[in-house]
Amino acid sequence: MTTFPGAPKLLKGAIIAIALPNPIPQVIPFQYNPTTLNRTLQAKAVEGSDKSGEALRLEGAPVENIKLDIEFDATDQLEVGDPMTVKNGLYPQLSALEMLLYPSSSLVIANQVLMEFGTIQIAPPQAPMTMLVWGKNRILPVRITDFSVTEEAHDINLNPIRAKVSLGLRVLSYNDFTITNPGYHQFLSHQIVKETLANLGSVNNLDTVLGNNVNLL
Picture 1: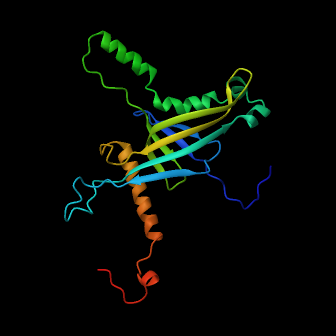
Picture 2: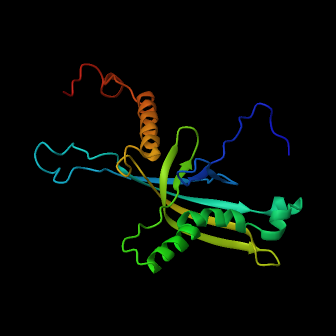
Picture 3: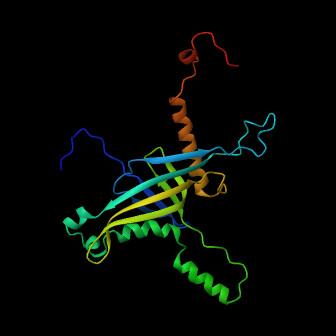
């Protein structure tokens, strides 16, 4: 299939996982970008902000939740005889996403050994830092809160060859990290980008909406 020479390059959305302190990221690109992305924001107001003089106070960034559906299809890879796809279908791609919800098996085993030796307090394994990449203006630290997969077709070995994954993500802000965590600075950078775009998307002249000689304050 040919592409018009002047057509812009389509950026791919992705989920990126970084298991600190290892800086090498695991990149899980979307085969097809979701057609819709649903976002909800809930203001993080100060408790008791209904009191006089407190209504406009905020504790930090709003709580943002994202829902999206990711589609996978192995048809093209099977047509060209891609060895991994022929052997495993879409199972590797689905597993890469699912493993973001699992603690590392090596840590599970290590913690079990510590328990057998009588260690009283064992910290739960830490998940990798996960980020949603949705264009250059939105690179967000997130936590997967909901995950459901519908396997719509399978090969003769019952490997999935067409599937849809529905993800629920909670955006993690500087409220959720210590200042030394890279996620703190990643979200702060995202907010600064958003503030810059907000200035481009608004006007400072009331005359454009209310006419001349109107003062609000």
